[in-house]
Image 1 (tube, rainbow, N blue to C red):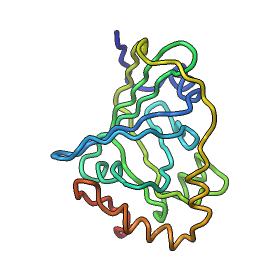
Image 2: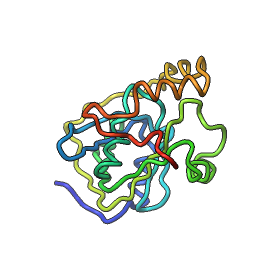
Image 3: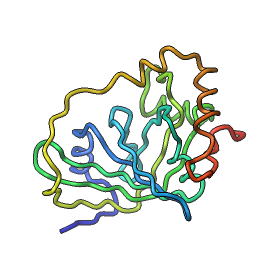
Image 4: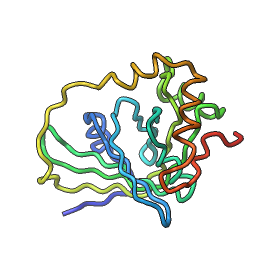
Length: 185
């Protein structure tokens, strides 16, 4: 049986901080639904009704296109270790590009330290519903490690080469929706 809440409780926040992976779901009208696994390494809880996560360069940019077109964003966390639980965060999101003035402020306030070379944008989600469910059907797994492949790829690239990759792979979604990655800030 699912339980619903208006915002994240301390118990929900504690659960999120113990996870290693979460899933991002987004969609736009007449477009494919996108589901992306993410490491919680760069996820931050900004308050009981707001979370944000750093988006690193990838082979597509679906979430940004969907945020621009529609804004609906769902994050899902599953307990793969310990007691079973699924926690979903429903709400609206927006992308803050790496070159936007607000990016530096968000980074300094919530992350600190050196910005990863592959940083593309920060997604900010305003939560309007938190839902938990049993998670009894989720298999148990043990966390092993983060994969270094993306960091290794980015380490070999200049910022200009990364931006060139974005121009080739990240300016539209697979459905042709613009991602806004190079719009005027």
